Image (cartoon, rainbow, N blue to C red; front, side, top):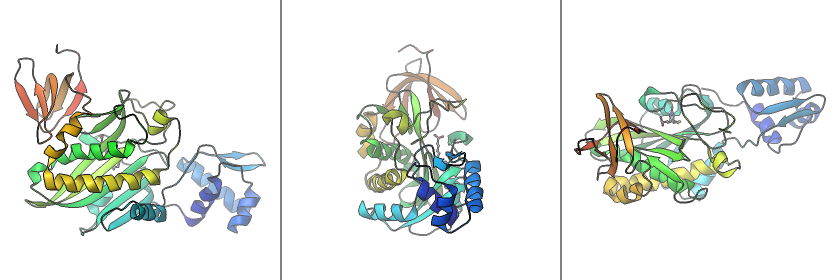
Length: 331
Ligand code: BTN
């Protein structure tokens, strides 16, 4: 677990204007020597920040960068009416924001952990989540819930709706789809992944950790991933976005969606979810622990389980599995 040192934060704050600043000028502003500035800049470059040093002229950020900031986030959560007491945990680098909240002693607050990068970001099915420094959102929040634990699988679908609500300002209502259970897809590419973990305390009490990996400012076209196609808000909108604004808005939507889910269950969201169903009526394969199943996706039931019609016309209701499009089954 690492945080930026005060001098690194101050340096990045000055460089945020995108201009070139000489080592002398920076040293004077921060009351340290030019050599100290040079050392700090090299450390920041080694961490992966998009900084360039121009011979004799100084240092410059070559991509816009607005760091996550605790005071800003607290203020925005307050201004936007976040309805709970929240604990904020911000890191420059961490293994995984989900793992951090899992290990944090239980309490009654909503706990929110965000990081500029993750060294062991976790995806579903034990996969790795690519988490480069300062580009995207790696954010987990922990909620104490009181509901029958068997109903909680529907929550993972509801979280994708809360994220869609947050993204409404950036995209046409129908351009982002949800691949069951909760991947957000734009232009056939993955924009956001969600990892939900449950710490059960009794049959009807649990702490739920909602981990969100939302690709915000990565230039995904310049950096294709070997195992999957991904996209970002930057690619969707051709502009960079302030992650503080997005995180605070997202947590406010999450608070409303989580509490409506606890009161009314998935049924209250089923219609809304189906409006964004990426797989509807498509031939798909579902990988499950016991093997794979092929068929046509037929939406979800009142618990958020995937309805699959197999090749013989039998209907299955699936609560876990990894879905992908397949071409071998006729509609
Ligand atoms: C998926 O496989 O689609 C889920 C990806 C979830 C990634 C997020 S990033 C923040 C949180 N911390 C983690 O280690 N994983 C989740």
